[in-house]
Length: 113
Image (tube, rainbow, N blue to C red; front, top):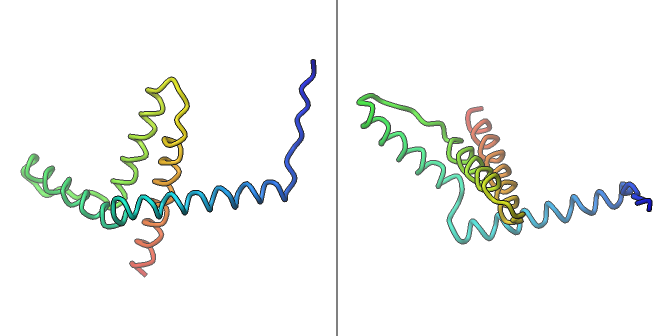
């Protein structure tokens, strides 16, 4: 038995991309409503970690603002590695954190100009 597969047309690929972006935006808006703005959370978490590490090491320690987003992506990847089953929300979260981190980095660059 032969399995025939057909490549998607440019129009189908574009449609898939639009669906992905729309779903990602919906997810990001929902999470922001549930948990607050990612940039604020990143700022607070970096500040807490800086204070804790500074006290622990008895010297000033700086934590980059983007650390929280990177950590959350690692956490979600670890969960994917530990699970034997596909969990769509894990991959949605990874995509979401990657997009939020991308925006944070761009906003941080633009604020320095």
